[in-house]
Image (tube, rainbow, N blue to C red; front, top):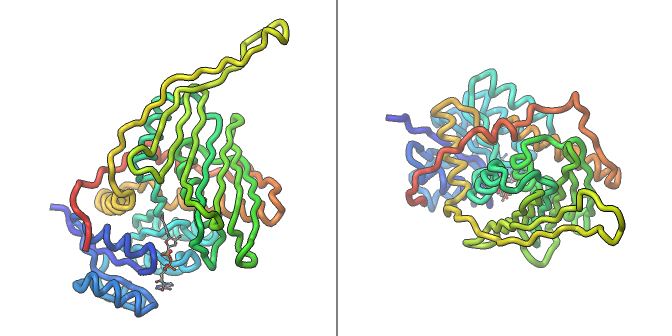
Length: 366
Ligand SMILES: NC(=O)c1ccc[n+]([C@@H]2O[C@H](COP(=O)([O-])OP(=O)(O)OC[C@H]3O[C@@H](n4cnc5c(N)ncnc54)[C@H](O)[C@@H]3O)[C@@H](O)[C@H]2O)c1
């Protein structure tokens, strides 16, 4: 029988309780403790899960409760010190996105985890979602042809963050999906944006990532939009996909459309673009909560010693891109190149070979 993993969650604000609910409902997992500096939040969570220990003191939470794994769901500026202490205390560690405030911090966490043989996983939640996994399957099967570009929009009103701008808050979702689909790290990035509400904290950003072979991706992120939008278009030479995450049942539609230039022509009159309009279809997607799959994956990696799909390396790649976006923002959108020497092994690419084990279908809840 597999040993049950004793898990503790630190940060019981907006996102932490979702992690708590999911870990609580998984087999081979004992959600054992919660930690928050805010006593009101802790009291509320304790009223939902009376059997779980509550702690305001991180040292006691970390060293006094016999936990195997720690889940960090605090604001980003606290990720590094809390995760570092957890890893140094010998705990497998799951950190919310983005992994940390700088790539130097990410590198240090990766190093500590490696030296101590611990699992370090970053919550790039969308990599565990059925629509994204379906898109990757369709792309890998070659159905889209060569990908020309990807356009992503993630817009809504709020939630305004105090310590990070909208690119660091929302774009990690799009970046993780794009790197996973393309399976490579960008060669350059530029980002423009504006801080309309909180000085110095951009609430609207437009980012472009350039990849080899003329491929590129654009990401629009906003906390200042009247409507919620979660839309991505993936344009291939043969077919195109529109992914609308707000749809309940028809999140992905594959369009059999393309346009081609004539290979040769003698006069302008002979020159006609060739438009192909075929059918569109909606692939069947299994309904499951991505966060539940991510939490199960963390437990599976602890049990098997396998590297997670969204490893510390993937978290580092993400933060490198976000740092470059911030540098570009400070230069009014001037491009920032990643030199070949800076290039990372691309966790996105190696991660594509890893299959997420399906979480068994069972009810979750407190
Ligand atoms: N994966 C996703 O889709 C997703 C969605 C939302 C938020 N997040 C991430 O989750 C994290 C938390 O975001 P949130 O919106 O829940 O924030 P929040 O501000 O609502 O909650 C954070 C909680 O952490 C507590 N806290 C702060 N510092 C602490 C410390 N040093 N020790 C103990 N507790 C501390 C606060 O009291 C608060 O209860 C962020 O990293 C965010 O990027 C991820």
